[in-house]
Structures are given as C-alpha cells and as structure tokens.
Amino acid sequence: MKTRLIFLLLFSVTLCAQSQQSLIPRPESCVLGSGTFVLGDNPVVECADAGLRGMADSLQAQLRSLGFPGGQKSGQITCRVQNSVEGQDESYRIVVKENKAMLEASSRTGLFRAGQTFLQMLRAGNGKVRACRIDDAPRYGWRGFMVDESRHFFGKEKILQYLDIMAALKMNVFHWHLTDEPGWRIEIKRYPKLTAQGAVGNWHDAGAPARFYTQDDIREIVAYAQARHIMVVPEFDMPGHATAVCRAYPEVSGGGEGRWKHFTFHPCKAETYDFIGNILDELFRLFPSPYIHIGGDEVHFGNQTWFTDAEIQRFIEENKLVNETGLEHYFLRRVADMVARKGRKVIVWDEAIDAGISPEKAVIMWWRHDRKHQLLKALEKGYRVIMTPRRPLYADFNQDASHKYGRVWDGYNAMENVYAFPEPVLHLARGYEKQLMGLQMSLWTERIADAKRLDYMAFPRLAAVAEDAWTPETGKDFSRFMQRLPLFLDYLDGLGVYYYNPFNPSATPEPAGPQKAAAEQ
Ligand code: ACM
Image 1 (cartoon, protein in one colour):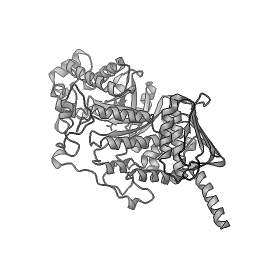
Image 2: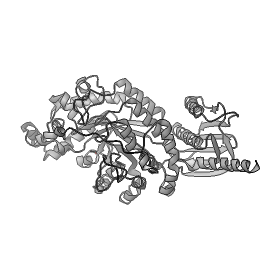
Image 3: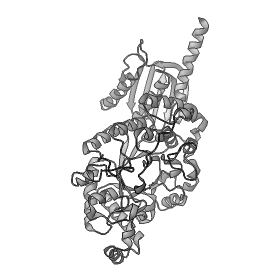
Image 4: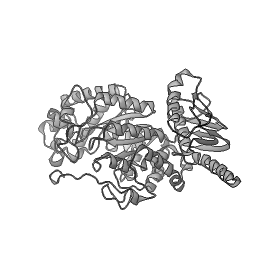
C-alpha cells in the first residue's frame, strides 16, 4: 500500500513536471517551484478589470470543458493586464503556486497567449500543474499559416478548426489564398459572376459545382480569428493567376495561352484598375487587416499576349516601360498605390522586389528557396520580409521518402528540416534582423482535394513551424521537440484531425491526392 502511495505521488509529480516540459512552442523561460495547482470543479477565472471579463469567461469555459475528474475545489485563477511585464506586445508571465495561478501580460493579446499556455499545461498534466514561473515572448511577430482554397475548397468548419489549432500553437496570421486559376472563392456583391461563374471548378475538376465564402461566412471567420488574436490576410492574386476572374469578366482579361489561358489581367485598361479598386473596397470592408496580399508571382506563365497585342505594346512605349516586365512592375506599383491610398499595405511574392514599390507600401514574401539572393536583395532595398521558402516551409511537399502524392524538389520537407528553419538562412539577413517579420507555412492544394489529406499535410509540421517562429534559437532542440510532440498529437486526436505520425508511419498511411484528367494536364 505504502509503495503504491509513493508510486502515485512520484507519478503525479512527474505528470506535473511534464506539463511544462510538453509545451509547444517551448517558452522562453520556465522555472519549476514546489507545490501543485489542481483544476477542480467549476474553476473560476477572476479578473479585476471589467474590460477583460469576456476573455476571462472564454478561458473559464475552456477550462471547464477540459473534463478532468473533479471532486475537489479548484485552485484560484487570476488574470490581469498590467505594464510590469516587459517586452513585446505578446509577452506574458504565468506564476503557478500551490493551488493558485496568476496569468499576466502587458496586453490582451499577451494574456490570450498566456491562457493558451495554461490550457496546454493542464491538458498535459491531466488537470494538474506543478508550481512554476513562465516568462515568455515570441521570437517573431509574424507566425503564419497559408491555406490555398482556390485549387480545392475545404469550407468554414475546417478553417475554424485550423484557427483553433493555430491559437493553441500561438500562431497569429492566417493568410488565406482565395483567388487563382481554378476558382474565385469570395462573394463580391458588385460582381456576382465572380462566384456564379468564377467559383465553378477546382484544380482536378473544371466542372465542380461553385464553392465560395459568402460575405457573412467571411465576417464570421474573421471575428472567430480576432477572438483568438489571429489576423486574417486575404490574397487576391494579380496580375497573373487571375484566370477565374477573367473567365467570369473577359473584358478585364489580358490573355494567356494554352494551359494558361486568360491567366492575366489586362494591364493597360482603365477598366481593369476600376474593377480591381471596386473589389478591393469590398475586401477592405470584410478584412480589417492592415495588409492585403496581391500576389505578383509567376506572371510570365501566361503573359504571352502582352508581347503581341498592339494596344499593350503602344502603352509600354508611351509610358517608357521598356518591356513587358516593366509593364508588370507598373501594374504592381499602380495597385500598391491604390491600396496605400486606402491606408493599407500590400504583401507581394518575391518577384515584385524589382517593381519599384516603396518599402513603406509593401512587404515581401520570400518563397523561392532556390533564389536566396532574393531574400538579401529585399532586405537591402529596405523591405520587411516574411519567409516562406518552398523548401522547407511549403506543406504540399512530401514529409517522408515513402510518400507519393506530394511535391518533391531536390528532396522533401521532413519534420527535421522544417524544425531547423530559419537558422540556415539567417546569415543572409545579418544586420537586417529587424526587417525580418517572421515566417509561415504555406499549404498549396493542387495535390490535396479533401480535408483528410489537408490535415495530413499540415500536421504535425505546423507545430514545428510554430516553434520556429516563437521560440528563440537557444531554446530549440529537435530531439526534445520530438519528445514533446506526442501530447500535441493527442490534442489532434481529440479534434479528430488525421495527421502523419512520425513515430508510427505505417499506422497513418498517406491519403491519395487528386488526379487531373489527361486533357487538362
Ligand atoms: C507561389 O508559390 N507561386 C508563390
């Protein structure tokens, strides 16, 4: 009996210590103390500031729904926002003592992040947390996740679930790729054909029924994200990747050829810019983010008509734009100016570095991993940069050598490579560290047609990206991360998310990706 008691005691101390040791992302500092906090029946989150009541109530509801066996009084939980916590806006402190937990931060966002840490510790410790003091702050301000819903559409429930998981991982930007060749996915009141026609089809089936988000859906998703202190940044890709728009409104099409038919906006017509301006106005009403992503990538795929169209050639000459690339840059500058006049900034893929947009008006998203000089060039030109290089941060790449349906390019994106980022490129940014806004995982969906495969490609790699973006280099260690990962996998199990299990790959076979009809390749 005595031995059993000692064992139980030791076991519960280990559990409590584990609850801090299982945190993803790993906090900046965690010092263990003595004593234990126990989450008992009907925990109450106290806060003196009436302005925090909503947040405290929401944390309280989540604590109550954890569902650990009760039978005893809960420890006291207090939260407050005050100025004594130094550092960035999202920093926070948690002090846990015998049956007392204090969550404090210098901002509401910091307090929200503290709540997520506290929930994670309780989940890991089965309702118990060993006394500790955690001081934490993010490494980067941009900790993003991009999902492409133009190639395939996954719908509101999946996106809301991803926002919950992002919040748990302290990620703070959802980049939503909503427009591209296969489909336009946003209801725009002024241009109903964008959804009636532009939302028809997906990457593997050009005739698939229209799928898109209504403006009410978007408002709901943006509010859901805001409650989790996540910013939603929509992408309206232009002047290329505009096929779905140009299919619906050929009067703004700038042509394209073969596989890339109708790929571009018409770059010279005043009508094109009016059309884009009207869409932007509706987007700005839906998305409060200070940023809008306007793409700017891969225009050369489908701008063949620009080389032969007499009106376009005359425009290049009259405006001294030199050539078609000059015209592409003119287009991007003109739209960046329109966006700046509305008080927002554009985000552009790294092709746009040479477009001559003022760094006050644009942020560069570096994606071409094989063109590392683009990262340095963007920094030298004074741009702030978000890093999402294909290798290792594109999640449509395979994560294991045995996988068949994802992308491969000089290798694949194994968890270990994802976790190693951004250290391998940081030497390029030496002296420009302040211009690095952060990093994101980008999940393109040409090879992903259903939610099961979407989950499989996102997880668990998103956890590694979250730690890359939050935890300072000195706190990162891959083998320790892998030791912490099983508790995150348990959390995914609870949500019904199908993931790749790196500890037992054969138990989680790869779901097949879509095949395109031969005629469409
Ligand atoms: C991209 O992957 N085309 C940004």
